[in-house]
Every structure is written in C-alpha cells, then in structure tokens.
Image 1: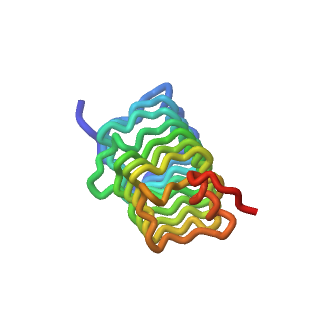
Image 2 (image 1 turned 90 degrees about the vertical axis):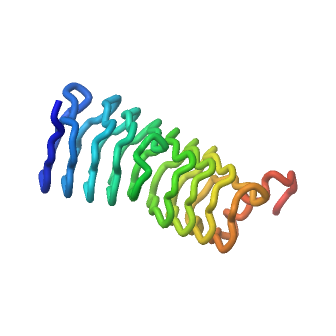
Length: 190
C-alpha cells in the first residue's frame, strides 16, 4: 500500500478509530476534534502538526515520527511514546490528559507540559533536562534515573522524586513542592 504525503490540511471531526488514517507523511496539518482512540498510527510521520481536542487514547505509536508536534486539550491515556521514532522527537502538551502514558528512556529536552494531568506517567530513564512542567498533576508519576536538571516544576504538584536516584541539579521546585523530594526519608515536615 503506497504512503501518502499530505501538507497544510485541516482534518475536523474525523473518527479514525473506525476508519484508519492513511499511512504517510503529514506536514503542517491540524487535526481538530478527531478520534484516534485504539487506532494504529504506526510508521506515520507528523511534521509541525497540531492535534487539538483529539482522543488518542491507547493508539499504537510504533515507529511514529513526531517532529515539532503540539497537542492541545487532548485525551491521551495509556500512550506508549517510547515506541515512537526517537530521531528528532519533539512534542509539546497543553491542557492534556496523559494518565498512564510512558516516556521511558526518551530524550525530551526542553519539552513543555502545560496544565497537564500526568498521573501515573512513566518518566523512568527519561531526559527531561530543561523541560517545563507548568501546573501539572504528577500523582504517582514514576521518576527513576530521570534527568530533570534545569527543569522547572515550580507550579506542578503531587510529585515524589528521589534526589538520590535522579539528576536534579539546578531544577526548580516550589517550597511546598520540595516536600516531594524528601518523602523517602520518612520525616515529618511542619
């Protein structure tokens, strides 16, 4: 099946859960209020694309290329971003539901997560250096051997980050959020 090349298109209110998005390369395209839930986006290439108010929950991302892609107000439950093509991976998330997503071992330097629900997200061995997590809920998010050097988490909350196993040099935390750095010591802070 030949792959398509589509540029500068807007796709609105499409349900790709029922009929698959044609395999190919999408450049400077917008997907607005589309459903990709449980769909297979494997091997597609998205360059400078925007997903706005889309549901991508449990979509397959095997070797999917995401380069300069912005997700706005999207539902993205259980996505395995670690399966994406990691070459030039560049994403941004605004007002997204990313519960149970996995970014295992990815290089996400300077990535922006703004007003996102990141509950139970796996950031194990992820390079988040210089990233911004602005007003994000990080309840039960996993930070193991994660690089968050120079990252800004000042307005995020509910995180537990062990400074002994994560790189946190020059990362920014709020005073109230700093409690999440001390939880493994079983101390009382008043």
